[in-house]
Image 1 (cartoon, one colour):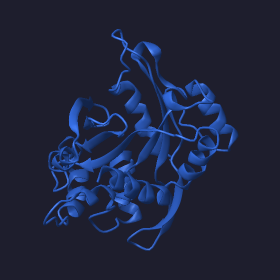
Image 2: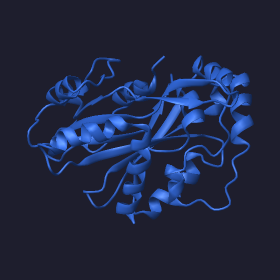
Image 3: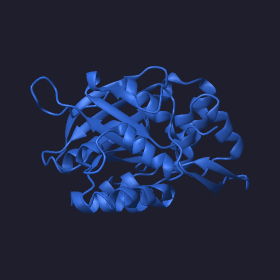
Image 4: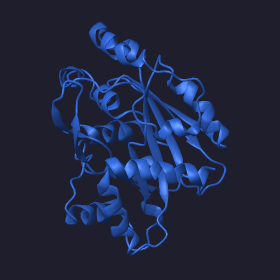
Length: 264
């Protein structure tokens, strides 16, 4: 069931991030056994799809909670999940703390999240997209001014916003810098917020990511605009003092990885 879950996620994700297939094939040509380190999802707190309601679905796949994280400036919280099978990707699930936003933004989001109808949640919800109508372009822009995360999620919906190549398992590339150079040489842009490489060996984790693909979408008022969709990440994990590879996440890194969808 886990294998089918990730196959469905990949199929949905690559429709919004065609760069992922190209980059995947670029590395697979030299590294036939690419390993996906983790995938990430975004959702709304105080909604039928809040973190606490989605988590049991992940636990049902055999995952357990690995860590908890808080992003004050972006008004997010998150949890990471790990599977007992080390070959199964980790999951990073974040949610927007809607109650911490302005009253106007709360009202705008409630207009849509109040329309979510969920009789029975199943694992397919993680690649279901929007569970509400498309917002207007004016609403999307209004959200961008306060929370890019909110704007992205309202327009794109619940689905994997990135997959992650494990640099540890690459045969021809040993550093994140080498990976970044190869991706840039192939014509893709890298998220440079906080530097192209986030983290350090001292934090036991280095990460980099592309900028999200752009896709032309039609908003509720009929306007068509290109907006950011999904991106691809690269992660290198370092051994801790006990010799085991670090398996968690670093809030400072993740905070900047979120900006991969910010293409204003």
